[in-house]
Image: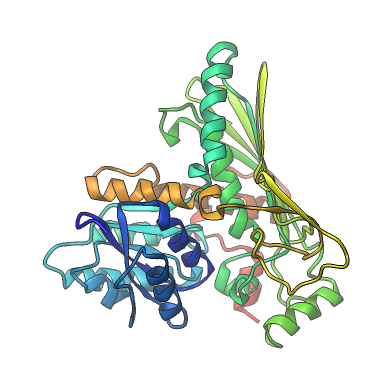
Length: 412
């Protein structure tokens, strides 16, 4: 590793931290210093050491000790949604113990459980006073970056701007128990996955070189439902997998969500995004698609088609796993293989971008403030679904709004 590399620490030792660490094989500017996690710290530190991206990586007692270590330059916050505020308070305490402040803090999506909490996150990072990044990997996925560049240059440049973006992300459900607990996660699939689709669709519609604020959301219509996991057979599967205290039938959130967002351009035109997310899709890995449509052109991206497929007959059997692609649903039949998932989904690109921004002292493409704006639209979608009407994300009442599933879980 170069002596000029950004030494980063992770808060959280779960699935997403593992993906980040794997991606760093392709990022020259970064070295993993360590991981603060009550359960996965040593496992993730060992992964970093084995991959050669953190030769001295080690577990830390907590986020404060990680932030206080003068050999740590920046922190990636990848812990559970309900821990964000407490984690940032510990980072603030650790940062005050340093002779030189941290060079940056990156925050995984979603920023928090509610818009009110997201605003508290923003206030905390403002108080800490170091640059921030909002970790939305889709904006750095090579297929999306290249597709947007070509369509805006050749299509919009000759025929006018695009006016409709669609994004869908669906799979069979999360790995970890806490995603299925609304009081911990903050909601279900709308919060967990539509944060990706909404931001990616918005970004595809945004003219290159123009700021995020060049599109203003003014109307959201959304639908949420429980289609699969509320059924007794599947609720029982969750109890068997995660323990008897996980009673999805009694304390559910949503496993399906769709939203249409109306945006206004700087010159007053209306454009749309249509997004769909679910935890009840069964197919070859994930369903992960994007479209961008304009007056004389269109873009279509299917991220589940990775360029490699294998077929295993019914005579070939094996243990369940995800060694071919994330959220793999079978071990037989025709299945895609992702040669490099961390790069394919944008993790390598986003980590390279944020590391270079922090090293250069420049403003990243996405900050905590952008994560707050994503939360505004997500909470507008939840409220629209509950009340059966269109909701303006600028409504100040959303700052105190809590989705129904979380309200119910809090009182159960």
